[in-house]
Every structure is written in C-alpha cells, then in structure tokens.
Amino acid sequence: VIKLLEAGIKLNKSYQEQYRSTKRKLERAPNSKQFSFNEMQIFGKFDLFQRRVTKLIELFSTIDQFTVLSEYNLEGMEPMIDKFICVKKEFQSKNND
Image (tube, rainbow, N blue to C red; front, side, top):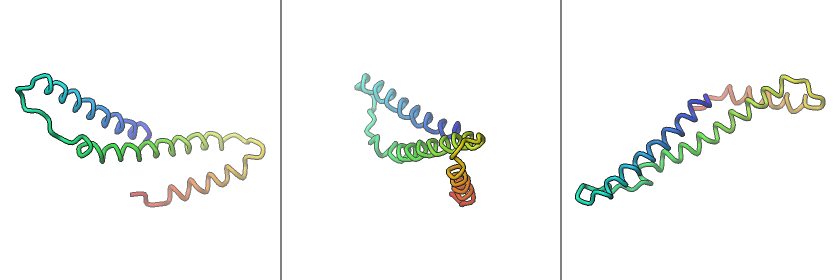
C-alpha cells in the first residue's frame, strides 16, 4: 500500500514539473500562446490529496514498525503492545471509504 501511495506523490510532482517546464518553454517563445492557468486551481486539490497521502504513509509505516516490535517479547511492553493490537483491529474493522 505504501508503494502505491508513494507513486501517487511522485505522479503529482511529475505533473507539476511537466507543467512548469512547458510553461517556461512557452515563455521563451513570446509569439506562441501562453499559459494563463492558475496553478493553485490546477494542482490545489492534488496537493491537498498529497498531504493526506503523506499522513497515511506515516500511519502505515508506524503500524509496520509496531507490528515488528510486537513480535519481540520485550519486558514491560506487553500493555502497550496489547493496546496497539486493539487499536489496529479497530482501525481495520472500520469502513474507511
């Protein structure tokens, strides 16, 4: 899942780089039709989506780290690991559309 989310972030960056590259090329050719688009209108929702995806990546990375940690019997960690397992099961059982 994390790799797919990271691919979405990379796609957003690529779109924006390509947009700016094309805009620069057009600016160097003043006789051609110029871009008059508002970047915020074009990429604003995608940027917002990217921020949400970044938070999800952090969440899934933390879950992965705690899952590995829970496999080891570390002294005094049992209550925290039990709580983590409960929270993870609760999260998995929710319909997160």
